[in-house]
Amino acid sequence: MSALLFFDEQRFRKALESEKPVTVFRDAIQAAHTHFDNRFHEGEDIRTLVTERAKFVDLLLDNAWQYFGIGDSVALIAVGGYGRVELHPHSDIDVLILLPSEPDAALREQLERFVTFLWDLNLNIGHSVRTVEECIQAATDDITIATNLLESRTLTGNRLLRTRLRNEIDQRNIWPSREFFYAKWQEQRERHAKHNNTEYNLEPNIKNAPGGLRDIQTIMWIAKRHFRIDKTSDLVRNGFLTENEFNILRNGEEFLWRVRYGLHLLAGRHEERLSFDYQRALARDFGYRDTEGSLAVEQFMKRYYRVVVAVRELNDVLLHYLDESLSDDDNIAEIVDINRRFRTYNDYIEVQSEDVFRQHPPALLEIFVLMGKNAQIKGVRASTIRLIREHRGLIDEQFRSDLRNTTLFMELMRSPHALVTQLLRMKRYGVLGRYLPEFGEIVGQMQ
Image (tube, rainbow, N blue to C red):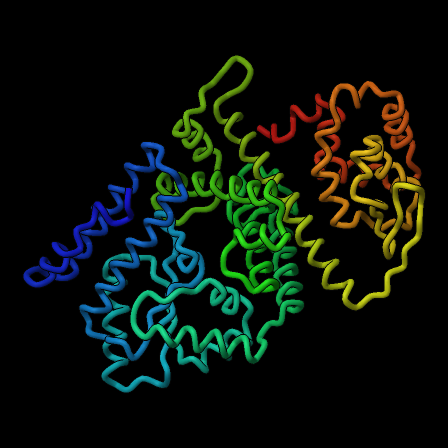
């Protein structure tokens, strides 16, 4: 269904000529809420729903802008999630009113009436009013503002102002790629710490906890800034994401969006914490049913945990990949051969060639044995983590019954250095659950 088939804009504007504008707008908003909510419960594609909600609000704001006669001297710009054309039932609608220069008294009054009207409609509006120069200064001082501008789009008004703003930001090189990357990574570390650095909180925050929606957004923000692209699909074309990794992010995002959409409807407000009561209600709404082996809520939450674990795994790999790329520009590499299959690169282990795991599958265990024997190895190079993830499917029944692999695993159990760390790495990279199927079955089983 088209985003606007349910909304008769011509009839809407005709009603504005004879009825109170607040009434006309509120009636349209209520009808749209009912329309979208019904489609959600009928199983409509979630990506379509969040996009069409945003486009509907685009129409409302444009009509309000025209109603107050603000004109084309200034611009109304969507930023943040709304700028990405994403809107959940009770998401914030963040907008920037961008001015070429300080407004005169008449324009200031028009803008105040416009914003007050939006509040009267009970829209979750978050707004700022800035000149181009003020916006540049704010983005320089605050990375959150700079991030919001990465995903901005003009809704109505002067369409040249946003272009001018972005050109100025690029020319002044505000938040260069390296600085932006490390600032956002530190921001993520602090956010994860608030959620105990685990995906397995019993009442998780679906947006801000490890593996949540913010982790997906962080990858996209950093990649867009580093590669200077606008479309996520371009990250596959330039080699930053594999097709499989892109699908993991996209599918994870769609699942979390559906959970978030349902959570907003149940709570009747902007809610991100998946409490026990909401878990049970969502499990029922999503069609899970109790069985002899597990409750519906257990099945639903197992799916949730497996999704966020996969997202966090990929987030870790991609951020380390970028970190290495930025660091390698400065460092002289110290490479030390370990054997025919592995070497260290500045004390991080990596494969000697990309076909190591395909040619010698036991290397999928050997790499952890080597780290357990050598305390000087700090971790695994991101490119090698990616290869482990791509080849872990080689761990099958034949692999598990191979005496070489049994011997390697027992050798790992006798590791003199940080056995728990190696097991956690194996779990994180999806190796432990494949080598020990019994463990794999309980991944995500927290309830």
